[in-house]
Amino acid sequence: MQEPIFLFEAVVKSFDVPESVRLKCENLVNSLGKNSSYISNSKTLFDFYNLLIPCIDDPDWCWRYGEQINACDIDYAWIALITGKSVSELLYIYCTYSSLYTPFTASYELVAGKLQLKFNAPDNFYGQTWFHVHVITAYTVNILKETFGVNVEDISVSVPLSIKSDLTSIKLRECCEQYNANSLTISLSAGCLNNRNSKYNPIVYNRAIEECKNVAAIHETSESTSEKILAILTDASECPPSLDEVAKRLNTSARSIRRKMLEENTSFKKLSNDCKFNRSCQFLKYSKLSVENIAHRVGYSCPSNFRRAFIKKYGLSPSAYRKQFLDDS
Image 1 (cartoon, rainbow, N blue to C red):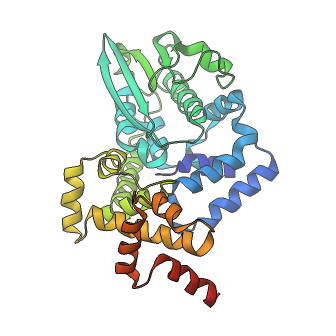
Image 2 (cartoon, one colour):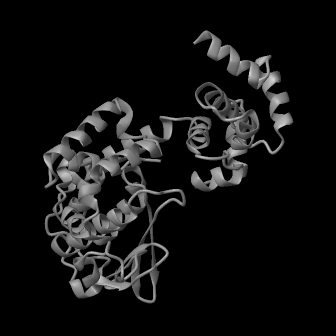
Image 3 (spheres, rainbow, N blue to C red):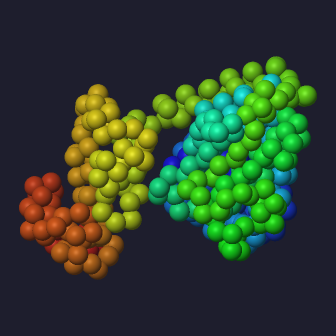
């Protein structure tokens, strides 16, 4: 999962969070190392959200945060949003680069005379979705009004939240036309597409777009497909996901994954088996689970098949492996 760097940087550097929360967030960000700007696993993201719970449990705080984001403290994609020439460029930036900095991917379409900018979270995203709904909506609505001169009457929002939910802020209710939607959608009149930015700065905008392209290139090359797949398999709390499930999370097809695996001299089956063995070794070393229970947890329906595969891999049975580890310890 890509981590929302705008969230990390903005909360750590500025905004009204308690000092104790800020220090904990800063310590976590610093612990991630130099590659944290591009890749994070779901545990890291979840840990960070947990630190922010005193703030993000308040939907009105979330909305204020979105309105007050200082793009210059965050990343180039957000700078490009406020320095582009027109609303059409804003839509292009969201759809091309939003997934680099948030858990959401964006797309837009023209429906019944309205432009619909739609944000979708991955199926496995278990972070505080309402936080992102408020931040993205507040920030986007604010720049549409303040930067591109869109009338507030021309903007409406559909949200994946309940009207009765205490996670829906007062400000969000003011512009929301549909609740319990399948995604976050910001709609505006098609006539707003060519609304111009009175503060358009081509030098800053072009520089920001170039940096976005650089980040995208780093993101694409920072991990091979097999490394991305192995990270997904390792991240699974229960049995490793299937090839089709992994393909869905990577926004590609099973066929494309098989082709990539051939190019990288491996296979999905091998990666899945490696993950199963790694997890089974951890269970054998650090838990008191029975071998039968471990077999089921790592995806074997028959414990005897697990034992045979384990012996073939390591040259000794799971029980002997556990005993050897305990004796050496």
